Image (cartoon, rainbow, N blue to C red):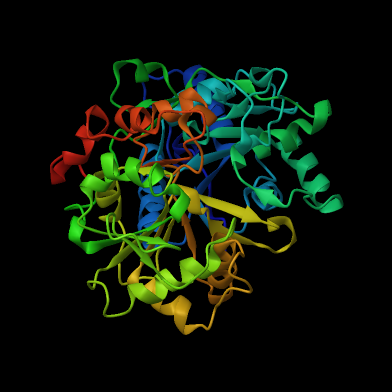
Length: 475
């Protein structure tokens, strides 16, 4: 149930290293050398934290970013490797690494950094004050994923786009560290971490709001406008070789009789056409669809009994032997070609559980889980370990995704997050957040035309051009 693997990188600047063993070149003035030395000292004051995960693909991605930072300095950085359940706990650990630093800079695996440009940006802020820096996002309307916060004026509250990187000054980090030690986190659920981090820092007006920094960007690194940016995002869509074949993914759709005529029809008209191996599981066997009755009564919520019946069926001789299992709701909208490309980055021989990750009770030693509506992806090995562990539902209507999260936590199998899966509708997310994504899924038909949403966001069009790149462009 670990939330992230974080690598703390404190830079040793080349200018300072040269000053100990060599003199400035004859044509360089001492004043210019002193200026360079002072500039690099400022950059040394930044501790970088790469937010990553335990899965082998994500470890490799974090290592690539670390090496990129090393190349820019030309000298080794001191490296400390941390594994934490929640970004909040990185505040205290980062502050320990930053005893002689001024800034903690948080990066995602896909964030690209221009160190010199970042230095130019950070030196414009008084590091003795409390600063919370990032690329601002805001909600267009109040949304369920943010617990309908700021419903009267959703745009009034800004939170950082983690992909662009975000920074905290050490005075703020030190205060947050004390706050966390004195007041354990109160929220039961962790749904959208970037929004919850901003709320925690703001503290109902007692702390600083996010300060927007235009140079922290989410445009692709090769975009001409990126010359003005200190950070960019990797321009490539996740692809690590040949996409997984469609007949190597078994798809289970959870439904019930009352939705056979509408939700199931939407699946058939949209993404169901992309599937090679798909079964509908219902409380009623309807041969016209067809649906399969697994002998589990329908429940109004939870569906744990049905999900575990699907897991058992996946390992049985009743369905083809495949490396991957995808479990979705009947109102999930998904792009299977994009999922096939993403799965090329994961090793099916490892226990992989992939989707949009939520957390429960993380401040009190809780666990992470893949939220069901956006789609839950399991490698065969993960299903084998889950069922062999004796994990089971405490009732048929228990929340299946949370029960699975508890079981995976007990097995110490990591829950792997991908921001490309979405538990809610496109309008529930900030426009600028979705603008640099190639989304894989959305969820819910409420107040939308689901076929129109699929055609706009998930159909094979310009969004998937990057998935067909040759191997030289792959991750």
